[in-house]
Image 1 (cartoon, rainbow over the protein chains, first blue to last red):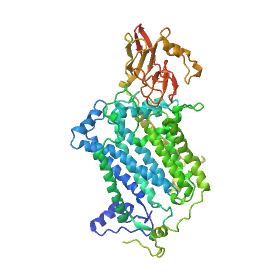
Image 2 (image 1 turned 30 degrees about the vertical axis):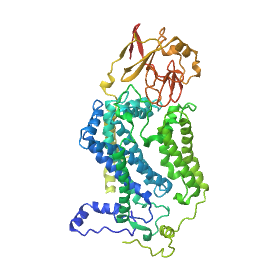
Image 3 (image 1 turned 180 degrees about the horizontal axis):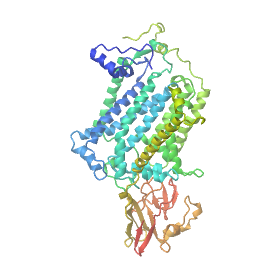
Length: 430
Length: 188
């Protein structure tokens, strides 16, 4: 599970020796995120975002458990208990704003984490399982975030719930019974609110469980690195602790500064004012938008406006939206190039940035009203999104001539810092 | 151990393949499987609408205050219901359209009660993703076809509440209703 030169856990304190014999949990932590895990020596700051996502999950679980102590999961009181939390509960405003903005920051760091994986080819063999488990975490996060947004029982909560469960209603024949089953009624109501609360409380712990699998799967081949060249010997790695605990600690500091800036100076910047109006089943807000992190997918959903043969537009939009995420599960087999890092793939590199631009455009259109020119732009951008993964990427993998790869991680590091000698004697400082 | 069991547990000599122990094994595991499935059923069914939700009564609507060209919003099974009195012009516009050109072909007659063609009763739930379309209230956007307009994803309905443009797949649903007098209907 680790490289043979990994540092060994040798407890000296008799208490630790005793614990190690009975339940080797400290040993597990030492080998997972301590000095016992050798990591490539050349990781850049993009490798911070996994740890930051874990930090964001911790913030969400702690603030969430606290908020649940003050929340009433009943459609008659839900809205007012949230307002009570904001106004009357000691530091309740802090907990709620931290939870709401924490969700956004969780998605920010996870999107950057996915960006890192896409650019540096982290999804490729032998790390396919790490990628697949990461996507499972992403899907669970989206479900959790959606249900959490329903809980304050404001206008956006109610209408968001109606639109998203309406997606399932688009399925032929069984769609409507499924929608009614999900909601526990014909429209969102008390039954829906209660079950969403129950699941919103449960799923973060499921996410934590899948994260353990994600890290387990990562530690079998070990971490990837910016060159995409595999570790060849002890000179290519440094122990996770203290090298990357320090680097991640610095990243966590920057993350917390950014988080606190939004939390204390613009806590409603990413929210929607309509959600401060209590849910009203008889009045649809003029412009229903999901939270910003769903915008690219929402744009794909709305891009389908005409029927295609016998498939209604509504169903096409729903299928395309789910397909846009499920497609990523096939990515390790769509990109067949043996070169991992985008740094050494000139053609991939160009199309990669076009894809990023495309997703940003989709995001913008998803947040815009459903009118021209946004509908047209969403259609073109959605088509390009699918074309990138299904046509462009497999073709690039086949025809691209990659740049020469460095012989090893150490060689790349020394070349970068102007030393050509001593490649074999370079040893990490202890 | 296995060989000892094999000789001991063979049910009837001469019966090849199926041993007494195999049968007991499969039967026991299957029984537990059936039990597990039986437990899953109520766990799934508890999420369906409860009796109090299903027991919601039908809705009676008084039409006397609705002038031609006006509409009201009320609720039926906790979802919005639109009741609209069409003007002569709106009826003419709806009749002018050839139903075969529509996405969900229906005539105004098929969507209203015989002889009471001016009373259009529909659910106020867009058939796309369930938003409440605009057009029932005074001064609201009625869309390109003068009926209802859904602000969420831009579906436009005509004066017979039939889908004409946008992503919605079908016309606004007409619930089951009947006239209890000249100026009142019972929905449901």
